[in-house]
Amino acid sequence: MLDKFKIGHYTDAVNGTGVSVFLAEEGATGGCSVRGAAPATRETDLLNPLKSVQLINAVVLSGGSAFGLEAASGVQQYLFERGKGYNAGKYRVPIVVGASIYDLEYLNFAYPDKSAGYTAALGAIPSNFERGAIGGAAGATVSKLCGAEAAVKTELGIQTYAMNGLEIAVFSVVNALGDIVENGKIIAGAISPDGEPVGMKRILTLSSVEPKYANTTITCILTNAILNKNEANILADLAHDGYAESISPAHTMFDGDAVFVMASGEKSVEFNTMTALIPTLTAKAVRASVSKNAEHIQAHVNPLLYSFFKQAFKHNKR
Image 1 (cartoon, helix red, strand yellow):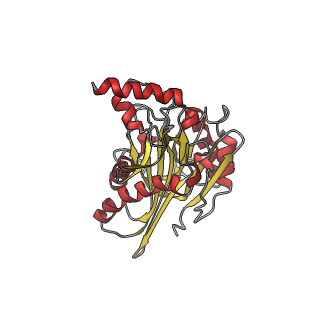
Image 2 (tube, rainbow, N blue to C red; image 1 turned 90 degrees about the vertical axis):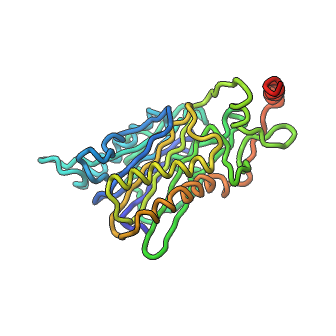
């Protein structure tokens, strides 16, 4: 499935960070959409349909906040050594785009550097749908307003689709401020001392608590569909509907949410089919980041902190 792409990961389990790499060595049509107010991104302007470069060679999703953007340089080196990239004249310049999550406070201060990116690219293989707290998701958590001790650990969320020759795979690193929800119900989030979900949206709505941790959900969507840059950007934008469906609240001022699309251009497909599929597949990928991790989808809030929230709730109800 999606044999034109290679996927690789580097995981620093000791420090709780890492990097995931999605390679299209011969190039893929790229698109992106950044809706978060606090993003850490690389080369996203190049994916604007008005810009001249048409193909990209890699998407890099990493931990380490802005420090982790360095990992993309290792991926670029890997591609350069193999003669891949945009023909700029005497040299080929690999086009590598990406984004990072803030995981610096998950275990220890650390970030995936250039060598980590190179290692992930070197180990990349086709049809790599390995799951777990790996790569860019090594330090990812959600439901963070009640502090790190009540945050819920996530894994790399993956959702695939194949029908009538069309192939799609969605990979999400879910590091959101909010809870993970399905049909309006919290399926992964901080739990109060009485055993009920606290609700990050409820806290933001009814109290004046300011988030302490930076957050971001970043996604790479791979497909074999024939797309132009404008269409790839539209799909990246529509994927945020999947965020809104599966994360509550989504796209806050403290999230750096971003989506990338890579299309290898092998299968002709009605574009409206893609627009209908992408939001749902993205929502499923987000939920998959916790659905395989059932023993960790609840984290309990400190009773004293919860008491503070309860008083805030009562005050705002009067």
